[in-house]
Image (cartoon, rainbow, N blue to C red):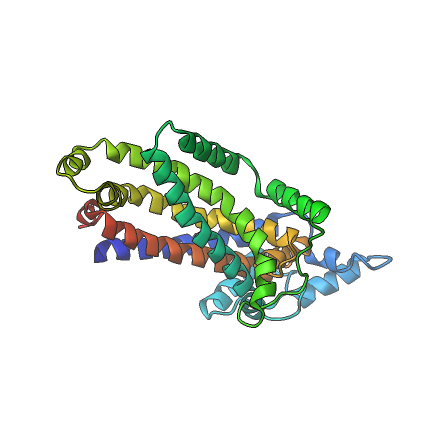
Length: 318
């Protein structure tokens, strides 16, 4: 098990380094620049104004020099200063990450139990009305983009219930009721896709496991159906589902950007949109790397959990 964790940890470091280089390169290769975006309100933009601004932020230096400076700052834990917000990127992330983490955590806490429960019920009542309904919901959730669902929900709430989400963030610990109003629908919208995917995979894995000989033997011995399903079937069906949950974290990150924009949540997704719009290289790099680090940590934790669930994985790592 220790060898498995070490191998995953080393591969995660390599992935983060590659992510940093790729993000840095793509931002510099994209058309446009921060100088032109910052001077967009000026009535007349001259080359001298652009060059002075680029010199101020070090954008006139060769790409190799900029990459070296970025690597030095990153190795010391410094993500740089935001061009647009004019403050350290680490402070911006620290101020906004709790909103995005709260949104994603709520979506995961809703999607994981709901998806597994729907999958188990659908598998144990195969070809029943409940099974057809659960499969239809899963297909709808997978096929419906989150921005489409968010727009529909907002339209219905505004048109028929005269509802609009609060526009100022309220902390969960300071004002729970306002926080619930602000996060209820974004969490549901963000959780729909992962719930559908988890439900579909859980159903297929449960159907496969329920046909195994050891499950039939446990049933023949007279064990209660609840014990057979939870202890023998579900535990052996979970490893692929846990692996899917790890990949779902990446999907939630992309969905959080859209949902935060729709519901005016001042999280990292909103900051990322501002950074891309104004070519704020340090801000975009910092948020992407922070999100990548979170994805790596979650994936590593779920790999350890899968190894605990499935002894075959531990044996293969020896």
